[in-house]
Length: 265
Ligand SMILES: [Zn+2]
Image (tube, rainbow, N blue to C red; front, side, top):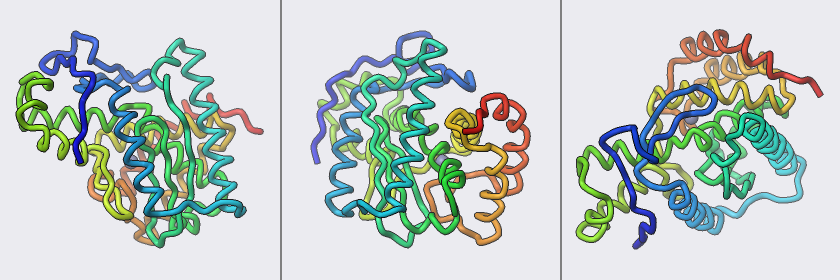
């Protein structure tokens, strides 16, 4: 599929231009080669294709729970970013939370707030709070612009600091392939694989976001213990996520801060 990259301004070589992104929650700095507008547009098209091939479940208690928990997290994210003057970071987001029938233990969130939860993860999440651990983590990947970062890393590997607009003219297929690598989906599976740093950052942010949405962040620990004990490592973070032990240690480190955000409902 041909894609057209409308916004082509990039400053890949240094973090001193508008393409530099500072995570508003963790402070981590990254470089984004493509505008978020462009990422959202492309992700939205991928999301539509995915749902056409994998019709979402509607009108069941499970699908309603996915929408309820997802929307609570989205609202909390919006309110928090607004409170720190960073609402522009999710400007243009049109959140969608869909459940699909699949044995896969999986969930993901594309740029722009396009979320899918696979029914195979529900036995692990068990309840709303468990689902909030997963959705907080996935929403964090999007808010932290991890797909854009992956796109940028791969682009630099292949094309160095060549300006994106000229590469698109001569080698658009390669650029499209990089997009598929960063955001694309195939069949029922997500091709995207985040780095370990990104996974850790998503764990940290996800913990804060679930707390802001009124879910007890302490429940993240039994969730990850369940995932670990059942060897359930099939979802998006399968390849590069920290070991279960490291992940739980990290979560324990961030729990005191998460609890400050927690407002029981
Ligand atoms: Zn992840």
